[in-house]
Length: 401
Ligand SMILES: Cc1cc2nc3c(=O)[nH]c(=O)nc-3n(C[C@H](O)[C@H](O)[C@H](O)COP(=O)(O)O)c2cc1C
Image 1 (cartoon, rainbow, N blue to C red):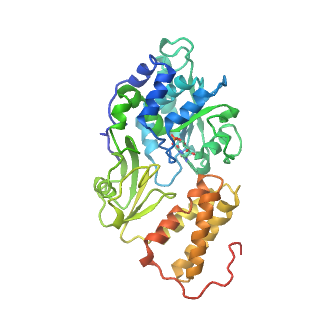
Image 2: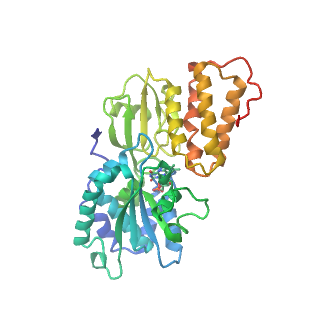
Image 3: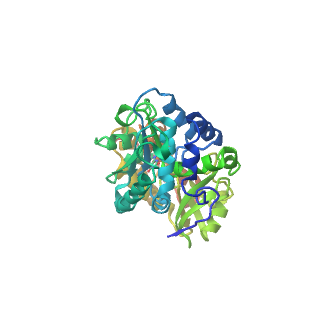
């Protein structure tokens, strides 16, 4: 795996804890204003404005608050947080400390994907060093009353525990199942207290914004997607790896960086959109081609229905089973893929499958069920030439039988 080190934001140098040192001399509202004005949006997938999220926690008058870093990273094809935690852990912790200073939280957790267990000793070492330098612990940087520390908690390998409320359940020692929302973690998070919960990359960006300013940050990227995005590129390319790419970059230029040739399509992971070659002039960004961090490259020999089947099998395994659209919908889509592959899917049934996909997107309890049909839908819409439908209408084929 290769990691491209130069970058405009995250892979740029700001010096040792420069963001935190600067933040310690600002007020909570100054920091909040800076983050809000930077237009930073969360890098975990949903793209929720970070300043707004922090504001909810700041405004909550509860005495006990928490900061949680989501390092579950279970989306197939995503490994950018892994690189941050291996190579820039202090930056991530620094972002968490700034969040604590802003919100008034005294305790924080790094919820680490179970498969990243081997990083724990090196992460603990960094935390120890940060305590020694008074970046963590009591009276941080000599600021009276500014106490905060971070504990590492390991997940156990369930993808759904990356969903913020499933993560909180797991952190509390319960079965990792998403909660109903509202209430949201900003008010009712860990142990029922207001919680700032962000992705690893989001936290890693914070010190840069504080050190260099909101105007600098929003000068990079596009109007609706400020800054850069770390992307994990995998699949049919010569240079897979983690790259920091400015929002607004065209897909075709990202493919050049990864030295990918004869590409048929790319997908934003297993849960994202699949974009065919004809649309490679589209741009990376929340308003266009949006990804939580994964870009999987498919060469011309790939069967897109095999790809979709793989993704759906993953979701079938990982569904927590709480809600019907997700639990029952995914197996029906898989059955549909089988029919499509055999050329036995009638046109009317394909319509039913697309309508089922929409129901799953709209009514599943959490993002797993909501996003599980995305790849299926975009492959059906974009790869029409690769399948033939049966001319015989499907008799009374009910979704449940
Ligand atoms: C099934 C599922 C898995 C998720 N996995 C992750 C993850 O591994 N890391 C992450 O930051 N967000 C993940 N998310 C999104 C989180 O629920 C949440 O939106 C995010 O952590 C918020 O951080 P941000 O505002 O910094 O993006 C996942 C969502 C779903 C539905």
